[in-house]
Image 1: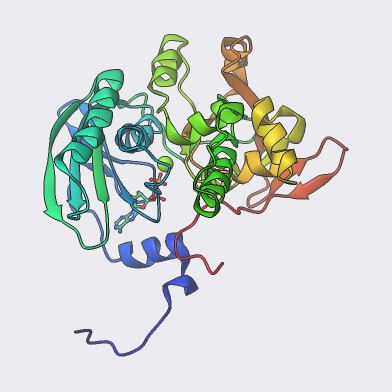
Image 2: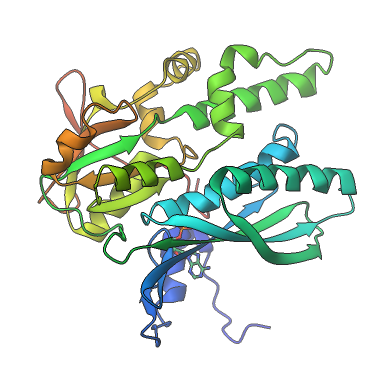
Length: 347
Ligand code: ADP
Ligand code: MG
């Protein structure tokens, strides 16, 4: 039972308010704890190396819908999403652990599918599954993954560190995973109403793939190393660029100016957004689950990335703390609102 009889709704704090409320009484005691709560991963010192550690949960009905997430893809995606937070520290992932809660609904064959997806991801990212936990669950499938990685202390990259005039770079393209989810949800509704109809997913292969077959950008971390670039700040795009921009800005005490015409959006994302009567740029800013990397670099490093189509400069940092401006194609400037995914939000 609770000793405190007051009742405050979690929605009054929101996900990030709740994390800072709960964590404020935990002060790190060990010299080996280089960075605790507040970034994509914690950083711990082991000998001469820094170790990055990050945990992610995947709850049926919250993070995925088994009506359209095949178990093999889900296993792969859970590993990719967890590894993505290790990449966000400029670290190379090395190991994962997997805790799983299963209800009787799942057969051995189903769990084997899930693990086959995780095995493929471990192979792709060259990481080892080194442990975990298994238990029964009364509310569907629950996954909890912890990823570990290594980074040279001179190369570790935090959310803090961006300086005014640094360039803001995003990898790949954004908004696709969210539009893919809209397609999958629409086809699910059609299927429930008319079970004989076959879903039309081929037209949307790229964005549906972005939703179901997420990848962590371990390749980008290796490439940055080859190019001799250490970003001044970095995080991964799990909740949408707009929301991540606030995290980078707050941690670094800078503001950002970004340019609508620079946002890297795949043509299929644009066409689908327009067909849903949605603004593609808003989808690119607020859609989550792209697992791309968003980072800042010193302007002197621009030459090293300018010819790589996988890197797009979308704006720059400035000294205006708490200012996040979107400069539109029509020449206007708007304050960006973070509408990205947040647990316990009021709407
Ligand atoms: P990300 O989206 O990059 O995975 P989160 O927003 O989930 O990051 O978490 C932000 C920070 O808060 C991380 O440092 C994470 O370890 C920490 N955190 C999240 N939930 C908890 C919790 N229940 N207890 C302690 N730390 C937490
Ligand atoms: Mg992250």
